[in-house]
Length: 250
Image 1 (cartoon, rainbow, N blue to C red):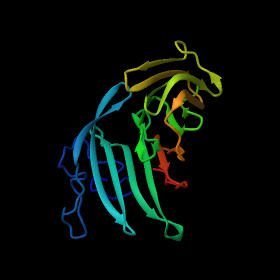
Image 2: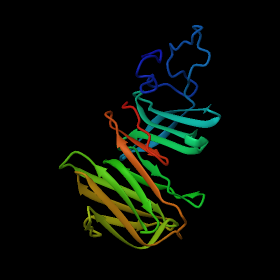
Image 3: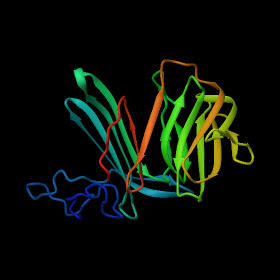
Image 4: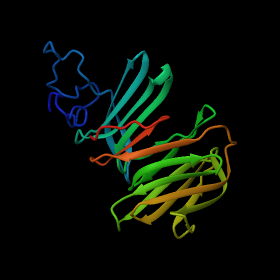
């Protein structure tokens, strides 16, 4: 595994490497040289629960059938373990049509950002949670967004959802599994002039949380559904496209 071969390639890298260092110090190409070896582009900080962790980042781009692709890998610096991966680009499908494809995976508990895309503009919604986020949906017509969350049954769970006030605003009502939540008891709400923040507490099982505003961005023919799936390694995986792509279990 130290040379980057085998099934753990890009899942685990060398720990405590820095920008410019090889991911695998012993990596060799077919000519037994290190030419073309993958290396760390940069070290950044990412929020993880109440803490911030240092993460090594690698980006590379390529083409498939003349369509561009970009992949980003993130590993916890202290352990070398994968915490996040994204892939975006385009692909040719039936009848030579081109679809936009985004696949996203990350460790449960790592801050997540979802991007409702409306009239050529995205509106980032940030979620901090100790739950696995299994689904995210924004519906312009109903002026709401919803999250599907899960965790070990009986344990304490929370979600902090930060919504731009250019996406959803006005008077809000929150519910979980169809039952109304009470502000001050079940959740808190604040506004900083540009974003609304909702901190929601609950006991873990499988839940659907809905946030409904009295006003939302004027409707265009756009609707966003972002399904997520959990892998066996506790990575949350998201696929955003016109049809679902099945991913291999990591």
